[in-house]
Image (tube, rainbow, N blue to C red; front, side, top):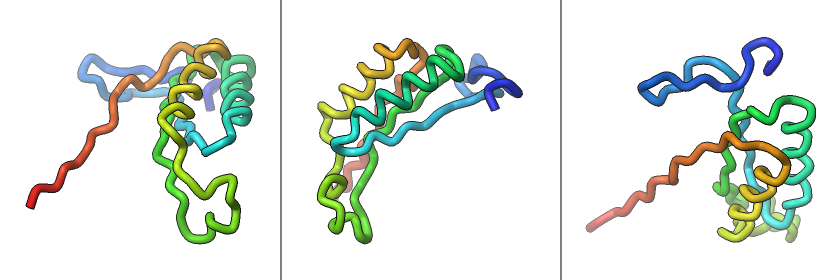
Length: 105
C-alpha cells in the first residue's frame, strides 16, 4: 500500500488526504511485539510511516482464558510503546490526546 500511495498526507485543515496510516493497538505485556512491528515499519516500509499508537485494548469475551491479555495495557506500557517507535526510527505519530467523556447526572 505504501508503494501505491506513499506516507500519509494531511491537508491544511488537518484532515488526511492520501497515504498510509498504521494503527497499532498496544497489547498488555507484549511490548516486544510492538518493538518488532515498529522496526519492521521503519526498515521495510518507511521511517515516514504515520503511526497511531492506541492504548484502547479492553479484554472481552473469552480473554479471561488467556491471563496474559486479561487486562488493559498500563499507561507505562503505552508510553513505552511510543518510545519504542521512536527508537525504531519512526518519527510521525498521531499527537492527538484521547478525549474523555464525563457523564453528569
